[in-house]
Image (cartoon, rainbow, N blue to C red; front, side, top):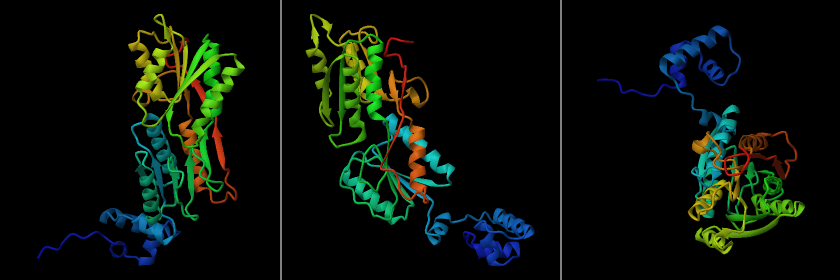
Length: 330
């Protein structure tokens, strides 16, 4: 009778190498053994195609080298880049990422956190929209863009400075009557500071400004009505726009073009995030760039830094302006 194929075990490796089981265990776990023994064990592992169960190893050591990431989706360019950068940062630390896409559903966020804790992850990084999340005290957690309490560090770009930078840039480029456009969550979060920063910049530069703010789920057609309300005798009253995301900026640019308004000749537009065409080409629009690589690295560093006695409640990382064709300078 033909013997059924079975997955090789550590005992099989010991038998193949002609060494004790304990010697194989030491080699697999990176403990010191004689060089000749190590070579025999590694050769046996290769011949048998033995696969180390790192998850089981981690459970025995109370560490699984797995981190869960909660993110609304991977379609929005900013979120997609964050996922990419966080995964890279974790790989450099020899950790794996458990990706959980929540689609903005607060209930799903809690379910994913419970699942992650049940799977004994070593920590959770979350960009969440549920202000009532229940997180076990012994589960390391780092939040992106939202403060969840003094014991949970929050990492964000400097949103206030970004809003102010956008206002000052529009003023430098000759705009005199500008608008702040926003659509987003009503929950308190760091991105809300973009509005205050923009107002501060407008006041400092004597810019006349107006605002149109929608909540998630509102019709984008309200922005089209807003633009029509600011058009008199066929001419748009506004000559500059700061949109709270690049995605919104793209939609506003399309509306302006539908109205026959030339961008950037007649109206200049600045977004926020630093989204690029196809992920790595030119910027989608002129924009305030979020440092996603630095945000990711800071999140991972804070999550895995066991020696840090007190984690900072908020870390704000600097933003920068980038030309993307929707403002006048080239």
